[in-house]
Image (cartoon, rainbow, N blue to C red):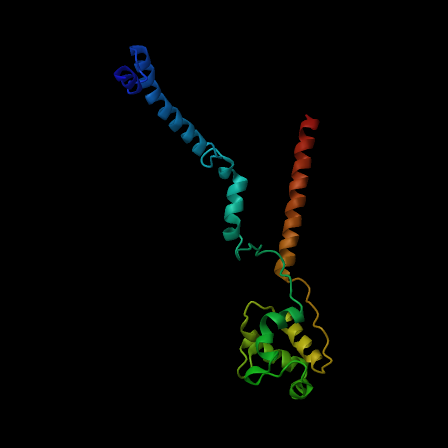
Length: 204
């Protein structure tokens, strides 16, 4: 009975070879598990230097909401695109003239506009250009061209019983015409110089 009892409590490792295998397995199994776990965690898509996250397209897509926020570059030498009377009214004049604020005649109210319409086109446009009582010059928008202000006056007056004619846009100013003439003269001079340079080798 004591022999049977001793056999139950004996170790599974009985030889030095089994001991070496058990020690090696004790070290290798955890190391293999750690390596596999690290590979599993880092196997996802890597983003950083050298990835598509640094391409010019990806960078442009990330900065475009900031880069485009209200910064539209305009050519200062390009001819100005004049706004219509309705556009000027909506952007500048409607703040007071849509509701009749601060004594401003409300658009569509023929009674309020009657005395002003009786003053005539030139006087009413003059009020808008230079200001009248609580209304600042050009409705407070100094960027407006005189033609744009006149168009807004015509729009509001005609909505309120007036029969004003739309102002005519004047011809381009002399400096713009002179610039066009000098540009065409420079172009023709460069063309003639190129033609003479081309004819000189042929003459030799």
